[in-house]
Amino acid sequence: MKEELSILIQAQYPLIYLVTPEEERAEQAIATIAQMQPERKVFVWTVTRGTVEYGQPRGSTQHSTVSPQMAIQSAIGERENAIFIFKDLHPFLENTEVLRWLRDAIASFKNTHKTIILMSPVHQVPLELEKEMVVLDYPLPDLAELREVLDQQLSLSGRPLTTQAREKLLKAALGLTKDEVEKVYRKAKVTAGQLTEAEVDIVLSDKKQLIRRNGILEYIECDQTIDSVGGLEELKHWLTQRSEAFTERAREYGLPQPKGMLILGVPGCGKSLIAKTTSRLWGLPLLRLDMGRVYDGSMVGRSEANLRSALKTAESISPAILFIDEMDKAFAGGAGSADSDGGTSSRIFGSFLTWMQEKTSPVFVMATANRVERLPGEFLRKGRFDEIFFVDLPNQQERQQIFEIHLSQRRRDVSRFNLAELANVCDGFSGAEIEQVVIAAMYEAFAQNREFTQLDIIAASRSTLPLSKTMTEQVMALRDWARQRARPAAASVAEYQRLEF
Image (cartoon, rainbow, N blue to C red; front, side):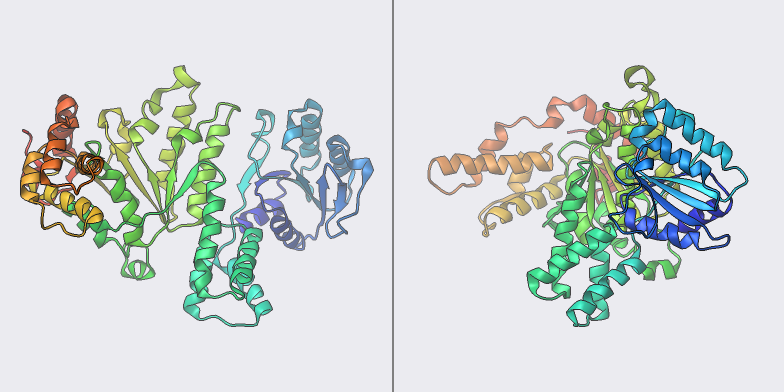
C-alpha cells in the first residue's frame, strides 16, 4: 500500500483519500515519500491549527487558513511542489462551497507535482468526487513494524527475550495500531515489572477489548476441547487434518490455505460448538461476525463501511477464524433486497461474496445454517467453501457419547448410569435437547434434596417433545437436500442416510 501511495503521488494524482486512524504513522510515511524526486514540501491542515508545514512545533497555527475553503485556496496558490494533508475534512464535504474548491484544486493541479491527501478514519466520499479521487486503506502495522516497537520497549527494560517469546508477543499484537501496541506493551511491563513471554495474556486481553470496541466483531473464548463434541467423527477428522494448515510448514509443502467451511444441520446438534472448539484445536483466535450489527440505517453507506471495517480487522490479526452463526438469517434474501431496504442487503451480500472470492489473507470463514433454502445459491457453489458438512440428529452411539460428556461434566461417577438405555429413550433428540434433559433431571432432584438418578433423566425425557417431532417436515426436507449436496459429519454414511425416526 505504501508503494501504491508513492506511485500515485509521483504519477501526479491530484486527490487521494487515505482511510486510517493512525495519523502520525501515516504522516511519517507521506513525509518519507515527499523526499523522493522531485522533492516536495508537506503541509498539514486541521480545523484547529489551519495549514502548517510538516515538522513544525505542535503549537504552531495559521489562523488565516483555519476554514477549509481558505486552506484549499492557499494550496491552489502554492507555487512549489507540495503534498497537502487535510485531516478530518469529511464533515465539511457536505458543504457545496468546499466541494467546489476541491474540484477547482483538482483542475489546477493537473500536470503539476501537487497532491491533496484527505486523511480520515471514516470512509465517506461524496458523489461529486467519486470519479476524481483514489481511496486507499492504510494498513495496520506488520510484523516488521511491530518488531521495532518491541525492540524499543525491550531496550528500555534492558532485558532480552528468547526468539520464541518475541514471536509470541509479536503475534499477540497483530491487528493493533502502533500506538495501541506501545500502550499494551507498557501495561504488560508495568503489571509484571518486565516484558516477558508470560505477559502474552495481558496483551491478548487488551486486544480482545479493542476488538470488541467496534461492536461488530466479538472475540470468543472457549475452554472446551473438540472432545466435548459427541459424535461427528468425519467432521472432527477433517478439522484435525487441517490443524496445522496455516503454518509455514504447510506453505513449504505446497498446500493452499483453507478458505472456509459451511456446516448445515438440525438446530441444536453442535454446529456452533464445533466452530468454537475448532479455535482451540487450531490455536487461532475466533472472531464472531454479528451481521445484525453490520446493518446501520442511520447513514447511507454506513452498513457497507461496517462490513469493510470488520473484515479488515479480521484480516489484520490473521491467521484467524471468522465465525458467522446462522448465516441463513444473516443473508436471507440478500440477492434481491432492493424493494425492502433500498438494496443495502444486496450490496452487503455482494461485498461479502467478493471478499470471500478474492481474499488472500489466512482468514478461515466458518459458517453455520439451519434453513438451507434461505441461503442464496451463490454461497453454495463449489469453490466458495472448502467443504459443506451436514450435521444430522445424533445416532445411538453418538447419543451415548453426548450423555457421557454432559454427565461427566456434572458428576465424576458416570458408571451408575446406563448410557445405552438413556440413548434409546432419547431417540430423535438433538445434543442440546439431551443436555436440557440432564439439567431438568438435576433440578427435579435438587428440589427434593437428593442426588439425581437414571429414572429422573428418563422422566425428564418423556416430558420433552423434541424438535424432530415438532418440525418433522423441515428436518426431512433438510435431509433430502443434504443427501446429494453435502458431506455427512457423522462417521457412518449408512447412518447418515437413515431417514426414518
